[in-house]
Length: 235
Image (cartoon, rainbow, N blue to C red; front, side):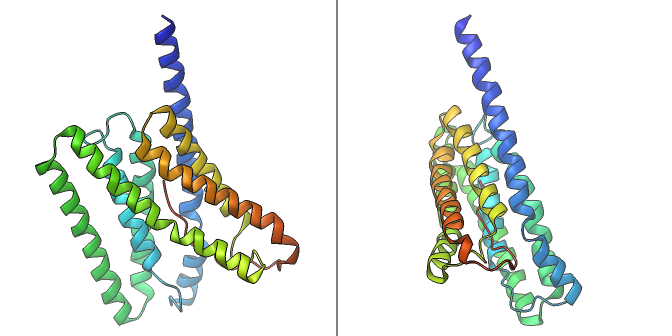
């Protein structure tokens, strides 16, 4: 009876952590909206780069695959958050291609096709050559590698803040959302006893806390005008 009660409490807490992570991730996925509003208004991508959205799309696809029951039963919240992320990245990439010049249209289109092909290769290989347990490990390592590669952006922001002694490129609410999302999925991963979830989100939590600490340290020397937010990683 006590075991069933503990199991029920664990399920409730993990579901709550997963839902919270999805909500905070949604805020992060929406953060580039001001950039794309400007692109649509000016009918030009100007000097903005589309690469972060391509990278995020690949990350979300791999993590979505990891979160599906066919690979990892019981962690569906990972699939839902990355499914939402895929929708946002697809819209961003479509808008970017629509308003950029011909050369960049070809480049972005080619990279998008390459990402989809790579994802199909991952799916095919994981289904054809691995049993269920090995499949989870294989895709899990790929998802962790993908997420860790996305940490280049937060590291770049941290370096930029320290170099410029300004938080102009690190909006407070974006950093706060990063911490809350990473912390939510860190908790979710610990409750699910899944290192492929809690390890990368533990790193994300630490980086997010560092960003917040730097924000409060340097905000007195920063200007009030904040430019378009930079991309952050997803769960």
